[in-house]
Amino acid sequence: MSTATTHGGPRLPQERRLVTEIPGPRSRELLARKQSAVPPGIGTTLPVFVTRAGGGVIVDVDGNSLIDFGSGIAVTNVGNAAPRVVERVQKQVADFTHTCFMVAPYESYVAVCEKLNALTPGDHEKRTFLVNSGAEAVENAIKVARHATGRQAVVVFDHGYHGRTLLTMTLTAKSMPYKHGFGPFAPEVYRVPLAYPFRWPTGPDNCAEEAAAQAIDMINKQIGAENVAAVLIEPIAGEGGFIEPARGFLPKIVEYCRANGIVFIADEVQTGFARTGHMFACEDEGIVPDIITTAKGIAGGLPLAAVTGRADLLDHVHSGGLGGTYGGNPLACEAALGVLETIEQDGLVERARHIGEIMLPRLRALQEHNPIIGDVRGRGAMIAVELVVPGTKEPYPAAEIARRCHEQGLLVLTAGTYGNVLRFLPPLVIPDHLLEEGLSILEKALNVD
Ligand SMILES: Cc1ncc(COP(=O)(O)O)c(C=O)c1O
Image: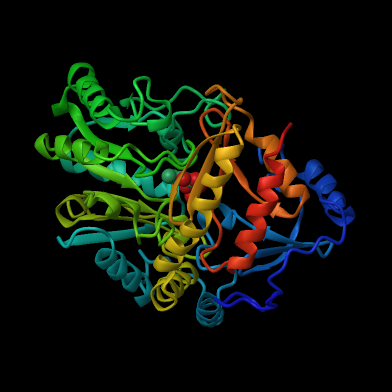
C-alpha cells in the first residue's frame, strides 16, 4: 500500500485506518460543544472533526483516516492543501491579505479573470468578475442578464439548486430543507421541466424532445419569450441528484434562447474545474453559454466564485454596479491560480475520466445483482447511484446507506429531490486503491436485506 499521495496534498498516508468507532470519543465531545454553540440548521454529514486532509483521505481528531468521496462538496478537486495552492497562499498571506480590489487592485485578480475568459467554452470576447460564493455568482449573473436585456423573468428547472440567499433559494426547486419556512420568495422566477431520463413518464428515449417542447411551450404561454431575461440551468443537476439531462435537451434550450434574445446561463458551480472529465460540463455537448457561473473547485477551498460571460453583456452594467468587499480576495486568487496550474500540469481532466472509468463499470456490475440500485449515472468523477425500493421506482432513503459507509470510514454524500441518491465526488488526486476500497465498502453497505 502506498503511504504518500502521488498527486500532491500533504504527505498523509493514503490509507483507511479506523482506530475508534465513528464518531470517536474526541469527535463526540466536539459534537456536544457544536450542539450548544451552533444552531441545528447547520447540519453535519460525517460526524467527525477534522485535523488534516490530503490526497484521498481525511484524518479526524481521534486519529481515524477516512476515504474521501466528497471533496467538501466538489471543492477540493485538486486535493486538500494541494502543494501549489499552499505555496501561493502562504506567500500571499505574508505579503498582504486585503485591499479590496475595487479600492486598490492587484494582479492576481486580473490573472484569474484572464484564465477564466480563456478556459470557459467559446472563443468570443469575454469578461469575468469575482465574488465569494456560488450563490453570489448566480445572483450577479441574473443582475447582469436583467440589466443587459431590460427584461425581468428568469426561467429555472425542476430539480435545480442554485444557493441559499433569497433569490437563489427562490431559483432552487426543492422545498425541504432549502426553502421551507423561508418565504416569501423573490418575484419573476418561473420553473419548467428538466429532461430527467430515469423518471421521465414516457421513458428515456423521447425525454429530451418532450421535456424541451414542454419547457418551451410553458415559457411561451406563461411568461412570453420577450419578457425573459435569462434561462438558468446546471448542465448536470447537482443537489437534485446528479441528473444528466437527456442528450439533446440542452442544445434545444440554447437554440430557443438564441432565437429569442434570452441570456443562457450555465451554473457550473458544482460541475466545473475538471470534475466531469471536461474543464466544464457544458463542453460535453458543445454548449457555449452566454454567462457561466463558477465557484467550489475554483480555489481549492478558499472562498471564491466567478461570473464569466459575453463582453457585451458584462460591459453593459454601469461602473460600480457590481462588486463587494471581499470578492476576489488576494488569498483566494492565488489559490485559484495554484488550482488552475495543478489541473493543467497534473492532467486532472484526464484523471477525472480515469476515475469514472474505474467507478462506473463497478457500480453498473453491482446494479445487475442489487435491485436497490435503480440507476447509475454520471461523468468523470461526478458519479451517483439512485436508490429505489426493489422492483419499483419508489425512492429508497440514501441517508441510511451513507451512514453505514461513514461507520466503515468512507465519506459519501447524499442528494436528490427524493433524498434517494448517493453521490460520489472524490478528489481528482485520490489514488486508485482508495477508490477501489471505497467501492468495496459501498458494495457491502448496499446489501440491505
Ligand atoms: C449548482 C450550484 N449552484 C450554486 C450553489 C451555491 O453555491 P454556494 O454554496 O457557494 O453559495 C451550489 C452549491 O452547492 C451549487 O451546487
